[in-house]
Length: 208
Ligand code: URA
Image (cartoon, rainbow, N blue to C red; front, side, top):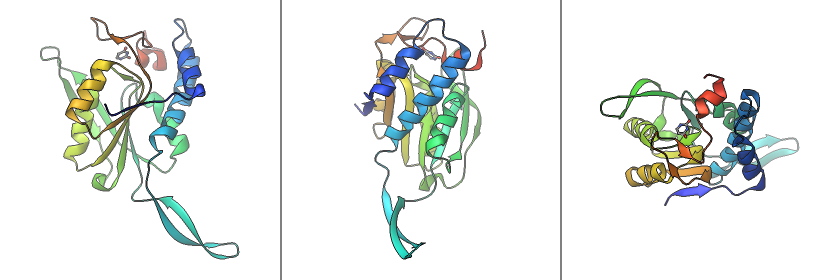
């Protein structure tokens, strides 16, 4: 399985706080921000470096910098927006691509209703963000859109994953690493992750 469950104490502590049943919107949003930042740190662990020479204070100096074009962060609407600033805290020069999907009520398949990608995706690493990896339908649809545009390096960063979603993404896209704070038990009959966090979008935006 291509999944990294981040066992850092700060990650596990913040995830535990997110699971509180009557958590406020403010607290959920703040913790989502903090957790996204820590998960982004892990997700960028294997980024390739290259050596360049710059003018230092005492003359030319060789430094290391991340190789290639700027990263693109890809929030899946709507809940992915809640993780965006946390990732940008660590990768402030990243470009942002956005994907919106709705579910076709007959086929239950995700259908893209909006996408806006940055240029040169074939030269960028894409970090797709969505708090919950449930069935994997939205994540797979987003990965397919990115690959169709030529993107070759994709990471999926989610706060909580269900085994069903991990299998769906791993089966369809074994090259895509999933970085998460937790691999939870299962999906219930309504598609919610158990124990999960409830509806992450509603909790981030304060709806319902
Ligand atoms: N989306 C959510 O917000 N929560 C789940 O448990 C599953 C999908």
